[in-house]
Length: 367
Image (cartoon, rainbow, N blue to C red; front, side, top):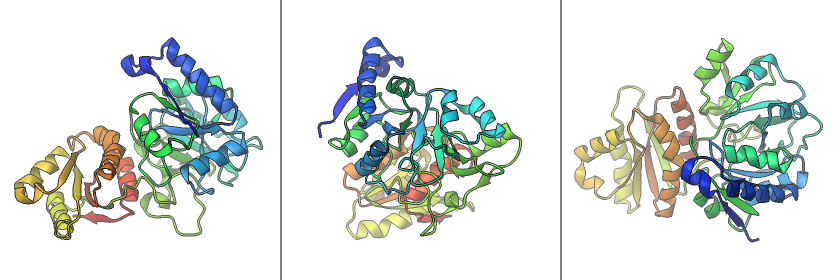
């Protein structure tokens, strides 16, 4: 299959869609109308889109990604009233959250209507819905005349795609088109809330943080067990990213986080030393502060390690923005072992740690 590329030149230059950009999005939308697949930018990560109402399109998404068929897709809308045809029951809390955070990086799970095929929902009677804020995503959905089912535009299990080049790397020849809208602003997937119970339940942390949601609703939000640890075998995931190996580099990876006042840099050196002695190519993904500490502790060892910086410890948004790109860089460089610095599990740091834990297959050292 030949994969077309639509480059949004005006948007990449000045942040607004020009006439040529709109024409390219119309062409991409025509592909969706015919049941084709289009990778496109959102404010979180790139999505791999197909018509959410066409079972064959959803089946093609699963095949293109190599995604397990019980892992549900997120349906993307471009107008709030489209929620009515997807969700069988919309609670007052859901409406309040939609009014507050849509368009934006929040996905909500509802009991589905009969219009939504189970091929799109991973066989579930629920549907995950998001209203993205990225201008290109909104125009693409509008021009397609439908709503778009779109998981992240990567091969299943790999780090999510935050640039068109990542989509090409994973999906060239597997999908009909890729829309290049530059780098994604946030870099982590959306928050997911289950709205089907008496109270909302957090299924995946994201840029709309638990603290923000609690401030909006006026009460605490329950957190699903899959956020804290791997989902048990035989349990069907309620939403994307809950059960299967996700966000992972090809390298073996360990996550090191400060919890009890210990030294992350010292623990990193302890983890790396035997790997270097075994002849493996090693990398550390860490803050500028941690890198300085590592070089001060043992400069001769650090000369043999690839250092990838996430920015200052004080800037969690920067770390979230670059983490998937750094994991992909490590893959491209043939790194065999990665030691990554964790963050405090609050606000956006909770979302970053969730992705890092899954990338490391829940191998975490607390110090």
